[in-house]
Image (tube, rainbow, N blue to C red; front, side, top):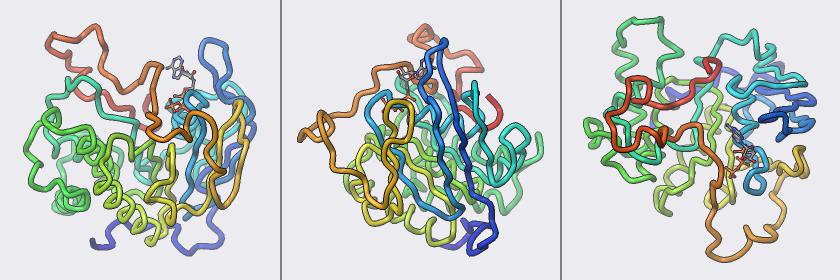
Length: 285
Ligand SMILES: Nc1ncnc2c1ncn2[C@@H]1O[C@H](COP(=O)(O)OP(=O)(O)OP(=O)(O)O)[C@@H](O)[C@H]1O
């Protein structure tokens, strides 16, 4: 892999934290999910955000990207208050999943290219460098030979790799990945761990929602655990798994609505244009 994905904050001891989250409160329908979260993520750190189902991990990622609004508190992104932050090209977001139902008629390459939207001026055509970055992102996740295929022909794990390539294609220095290992087989998990290790080596900041560290054990520098709407653990290592998650064969469940799922009302019908790619864009939603 070349070093095109180079963190601009790499080695800069004066760089502000990638994220500074102070007393953040986020709720749905008046019920707080995050209830006073304080978290500083230094630029260049590789950090896992863990916690039980429904503890607010995705909500925290979406709040950090301006997708889920804060009802109280404050978030700075690379030193700038979130509402004034405009440098979204620095951020590569890997949402939890592409689609549950496969109502996405776009090709793999089109989805990956959509990761450059924040970096490009409205309606401008991709440059040679943009196309090279897409090629490289596809190669990095091992999907070059699937570039022209519709993403709905891919397995869940391959779709996850498409989402990672989409984040890489924008050449950001800050990655927010919501369960990138979900549905990915063991071999591809190891491959992804190597990619993330490479990103870390370039000085990128990598924030990952994970259920278990798995092959990322040696790559993760810090693990925080959400509990009761706050950070319940913050350390070099994750605490030992307890309860349901520790059970052999435990399968992680998503019992609540996923904003990236296609609208179930559209099942069996031609998707409307707005439904073609149901992906949230940082700072845009
Ligand atoms: N768009 C939404 N509208 C209403 N409630 C929501 C929405 N998104 C999440 N929730 C609720 O907020 C709580 C936290 O959800 P969130 O997805 O942030 O948790 P999580 O820790 O990422 O869970 P999981 O591990 O299952 O992905 C859950 O109770 C969930 O049902």
